[in-house]
Amino acid sequence: MAFKAVKPENAHEGALAIGDGGIEHNKQSMDRQFGIWSAVALGVMCGCAWPLFGGTIVISLYNGGPPGVLYELIAIGAVYFVVSASIAELASAIPSSAGVYHWAGILGGPKYGRVVGFFAGWYNCWAWIFSTAATSSISAVQLVSMYALFHDDYQSERWHVFVAYLLCSWICASTVIFGHHLLPLLNQVGLFWVCVGGFITIIAVAVMPSTTGNGYASSHQVWAEWQNDTGYSSNGFVFLLGLLNGAFALGVPDCVSHISEEISNPSRMVPQAIFAQVTIGFFSTFVYLIAVFYAAPDLTAVTDAASIFPIADLYRQATGSKAGTLGLQLLIFLPSFWGILGPMSHQVEHCGLSDATMPPRSPTG
Image (tube, rainbow, N blue to C red; front, side):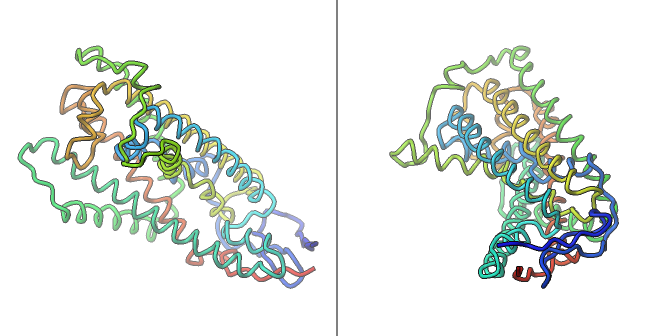
């Protein structure tokens, strides 16, 4: 199967599209407002790896305890490096804001292109919708837990989290709708919070247990003490099940491709941003988890607690104070809240901001 590529004088003036004559370039319809750093920031913020993993850490602990979480992250990290390399190659060869369903429409060929592109597009669309809901939900729980930290008689109600969820969602939705031109700057601010917040958190939880006298967990607890609390008898199945937790944090390597029409030289910069996103996400999460697990010698108290945000209990063990716990919670909340902007902005792209998001036609030739 051969494709006819129609290339203009400047290959970066428009996005690739599928026409009757083969792969063609559309006329550029959006401003080039992203640079390499703002693109990297968008990718890191969409993944928001270590804050989101911290927000769901108890679910991860059921699948093997600390060693299960760490080895599962290594395994899924290797998988996503390979997946990201494939996506980066597609983004380099066919830069398109449509992303997954555009590539599926081309690779499906004349016979299956429209069908494959249709299902790939809808699966991708629903993935971004659920990602937005999950990120907003985690941020909402973090808000409520910070209030509960200083109110010992607080009784959690579902509607409390729902109100906070609506607040986070509508603030971010309004920002994307009315402040779209500010997204590159906001993403760079978010990248600052992810990197600096992660660094401060890692240093704090690594140092504080020695100053408070709470002590550290042993290396056997962190690297070897397997705990299967899922109810399933097969540890192999539990390990595979636990891969989903790491995939939740690392599983958005296509996000930067959706700004291909808003970045200069997308064939080069988008793959670079994808590589930076996955690399920063994996290593920051891995180091963060090691520091947290060593700083919390009593994980049973965390998994058995009725707390709505268990990572706060881990921070409480590490710092020994409410003030320290609040500070670390703020450092995990701010990146999580900023991370809502990424999925929401990509849903706007899917709604048809650019020519590249039109349904693909089957290529001929």
